Length: 509
Image (cartoon, rainbow, N blue to C red):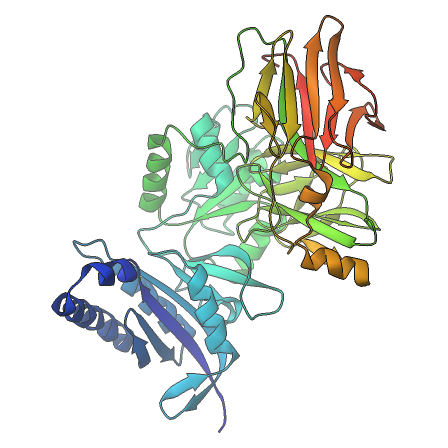
């Protein structure tokens, strides 16, 4: 049977499983009936045909990608009730084989996998859908690249933005919270700019003379600081604006206002640290500050041929994440950084999402979570370190000793325990195979439960090693030295334990 190009749509009812557990048989029948009465007419009104449903999920086929996205937006906008039910909808466009009232093929699998990542109340779709739909009718933005079960490599996924919705990019959100956001409406005089501003341009038509004029009148700023509010963009206008590293906020003016108001309402946020944030003692004269990621040299012990780490918006480094803003990749040829979202630059050069840049000693990486500095180390043990201080810190008072490790004694600074092996590229051979099967990770191989300690005595601060196999190092200037005997350290020095970097600081600095 010949295949046909179709857009495959999956819908899913949030909170369904919990509701089933709380419903009797009559309540469950009413829930399913209400679900079908709300979903099927919307799909059919937009030209879709329902293939099947399984409780809380419908599968439908659309001959036109644009109609499918518009149906999905209509669905998530309409479907809510007093019990708080919301829909999530996902789709993919490509070849589909229809057999006896059912549909099969890679496109069906892709749509189903995208649905598993889609949050409630949102519409996500594949690259094929984005290419096929009429972008003059649908507002959209990228969600990122995802590893989807059963699909090789990483898959780009996009989000449709309805008339009442706006998801603010992280640089805009942070600038609003820190008072660095400057909103410029069309026709406004050019305002004074604060240090490190994020500039939101509102009411300008993409590609217009007015937009070009206001950009030309601005003082010299990082292109990543410019964000244009827009809803529907022609592909050419989008490419032209983003090509130089500038950003887009997708949404109508009212939706942008509401999103900014919500941002201002939120006054507290989690640091997102893997470690406990400890209050600094009033008697503390030195602090241990979690300050970055250490990059072991490769190949490593005939086990690891290369590896990567992902940077999250809150500044954490993790093995792998679908929501990363950047990825650092280490191989025998060197260290490189790949942008996973907009708003990143290396050494003043803005990177487009998916673009990579080799890192050189002293490069500053500008990210939505703040600046990160790369320091190359002239050592076979470590290729370099990525420095960015966090809120995770521990104060040490005279006479105290603070441990460092995965499970340090109190008082101690706990190292991140990054689980999983999906960031590792393995060497060939039996040794690597045994390591892979035994659950080897760089973080556990290089970091002990009680790795090292910093003590503060009459002679100043000293670093000691507590582990027989997992070495502790100090960085003084450009030199990496292993701690084999107690070593005197001073504020400004760095300690490297496993894949973590800890800076010594005077309190308040």
